[in-house]
Length: 290
Image 1: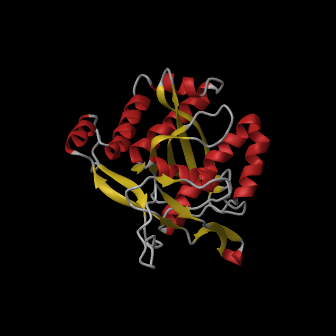
Image 2: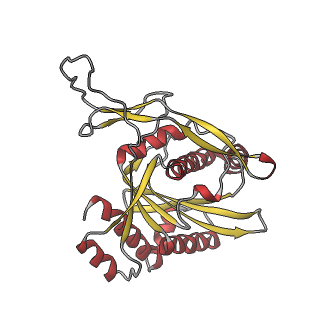
Image 3: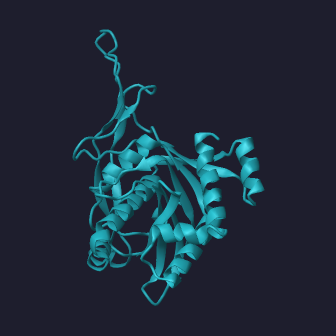
């Protein structure tokens, strides 16, 4: 199984497990305090997402850069339909992502699906995030809606007020997802479609997966690079890594009455040799790879 194909294979595997006899055990492990009715709805939501989602693969270093940038995502950021890269999706990370919340399992995957909930505010993006548990492997940890047109700060205030100690974890996941969406929608990263390797395609077909076995691979867009060769005739410098030149978020006004806000990431670029590892930003230097 190649790294890219793992994203689709894990999506199909989780669909089989959640839809099969073991589905209740996975949900019980993830949400032991939820009511039976809530667990049933949660399981049905996860199965629907997995069956409809496009599969995305995230490189470990790039996902780490997005996680760091998410901490500085502006509070006025508004979720808009144009930010979402596909109707339903499955983000699979090469390695679990650390979001800096105490006692919070690292994120292994995130899935989403839009649902119309007029009783609570209209069209919402329903999100499920998936973590790794030693006894179960990858399991769905929690879910929740973010309504389109809802600013991040208002959303966060409601979640922190209603969810108690789990509120900051919920908010951290949504900040990370919104940042990932912003990177894709701006073209800072690309989502190149790659067909699963032949053996992986056969395996998912045996699982009953009928769509074309494609994975959208999230990669750096190197639209701009700073030269790192000296211009004075001296010997080239041997860099040990690539690094990101500082960028920053800017709020773009949008929508009726110009009341909405969506984040735009400004002028980051990568320096250093292509064959060297990417060094993620430190402290408050939240930059993105181009």
